[in-house]
Length: 137
Image (cartoon, helix red, strand yellow):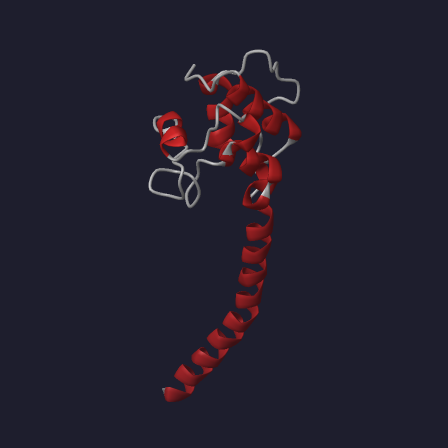
C-alpha cells in the first residue's frame, strides 16, 4: 500500500512543479499589465470654466482615489468625492495666491508617483481650476 502512496506523492509533486511556474508567470504578466487606467478627462477640455465636480472628481476617481492611494484612510489628501474638496484645503494643497505653487498642481505636473496618471490636459485643468478660484462647483 505504501508503494501506491509514494507513487501518488511523486506524481503530484511532478504536476505541481510544472504548474507553479505557469501560475507565477501568469501572475507577473497580470501585475505588469493590469494597472492601466482610462483617463476620463478629454484632451480638448474647455479651460474657461473648470468644474470641480464635473472635471476634477472624475480625474481623481480614475487616477488617484483607489485602494492604497488617495482613498479614505489612504495617503493624504483624501480624494474621495465626498471628502476631496475639504481635504485639499485642510492639507494645504491649494495656493490661491500663487496657483503654480499649489502642492496639488506641482504633484500632477511633475509626476513622480503620479506620472502614469498625469497628462498635459489634466495638468492644465488642475491649474485652470486653481486660477479660477478653486471653487466647489
